[in-house]
Image 1 (tube, rainbow, N blue to C red):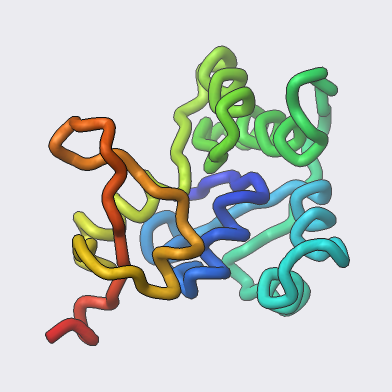
Image 2 (cartoon, one colour; image 1 turned 180 degrees about the vertical axis):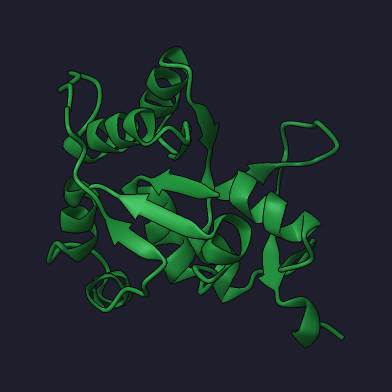
Length: 164
């Protein structure tokens, strides 16, 4: 399987040291040049810049043939949506609401950082723990409780092999 990614999910997964789950879940990950530029921009966190500049082979920078500039989307989001549409895979990894809505409008399947982490949890690659604040959880947005209440819950991630 191949997935096309926007900037935010790659950024978050690098920062919480969970970027390795992408190839385990999807195989190949495509990013357009604008996303690469955002990930290597001087304003990007240094771990993200360093990882992107020395990215593994499963991450490929691919230019879309066509990009439609949409007022509500930045260039990275626009290129990611165009590349997902052209690739025939029809799956885009994107967190921003406007980008997710546009991708769905174009018939694409949408995944976000938290859905990737949920998929990794179900696959046994990571597991959720409720409770204390860990460094990883400080990098993630807080999410609603799985019980359906609007109260946020803390989420920390551990590798199953490291859990006791």
